[in-house]
Image 1 (cartoon, one colour):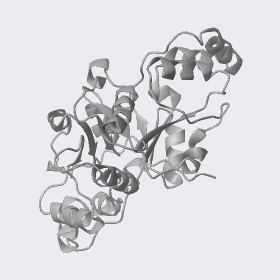
Image 2 (cartoon, rainbow, N blue to C red; image 1 turned 90 degrees about the vertical axis):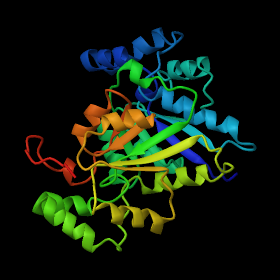
Image 3 (spheres, one colour; image 1 turned 135 degrees about the vertical axis):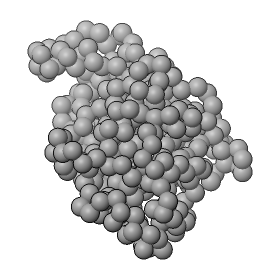
Image 4 (cartoon, rainbow, N blue to C red; image 1 turned 180 degrees about the horizontal axis):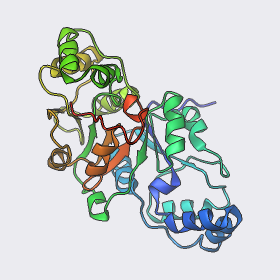
Length: 311
């Protein structure tokens, strides 16, 4: 068996890649058989781009900028059957997306194949599948609805933005904040400034992204990364030293001290932003493609809990 070359591998669901809302409504209202009949009857009609389409297109364009074997691969992981998924592949062909590998799971969750395909990241509109992937130890995010104008990525740099706690890092510091307050959190982080934080669900993805960046000549990399965190001094030091310990370079680090993130994401020209907090995701999704990472203590609490993350 031929070993797959080392590359950045992204898994995306069919509903994240294409607009399948009309068919999904039929599935919810009339059931699986009606949905299948609808997709087969319309399989030669091209689907409109979905929330993750601009990001996927930009990711795949990276392969045109490096010689040799492709360094980025996108895998389609779908709850559709292969029969109903033919419309998806017809649309992939229409848009000339070099996507060749897929798993059509006939109504079951496709997250089981994230590991088998060697994926570093799974993007889906199905929150249950995302939670399952995260619980299995893989980076995953639920792509939120985004205004069409906010999705249109230009042909420039590919910009990834990440929250810190519970995304790149574990939620160990966040748990102190939730239980003891901001003063205790700040004191704890200052005291532990030289102790690296544990990795969060997106550490391995960030590392793979960093490795891809290293394959470009200096000052010619089309990929840019940013840490966009509500932390502020003195809690910044531990974050900086953690990334240094991991030997991972972040191009830009924004310590906002509780300020709203959306304006900074626009200024960074983010193509996608990942955060564990729904309040930050909802505001960001008005401007950039946003992935909610349902991980950590913030996602264990009741929706009506008045305590919010503000550090």
